[in-house]
Image 1: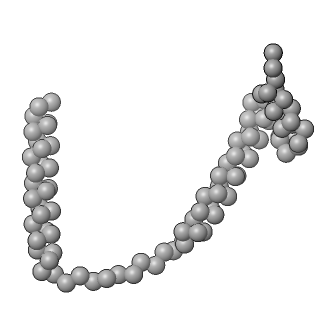
Image 2: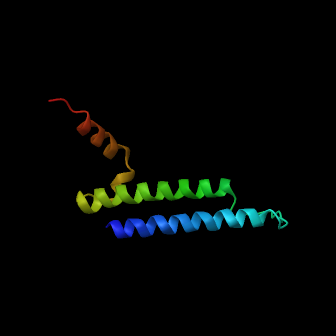
Length: 93
């Protein structure tokens, strides 16, 4: 274990030295500013994530109610089903 720790610390030191050397020589080089064009804009990524989240919630509720709960898959979209579930959760002894 101690041998690995010594090797890790020595490689860390050499990496730090290499980075330091590259930054000092990088000052001599000219920098080129690049403009990054995104393939998918951020606002579209957020919408995609939200849509996938809704799809996963619907698929999970349908699977859980129909396969695990032995109910009809289309019953998950009825208001009475959800009211029954809420009544079971809020039921007092």
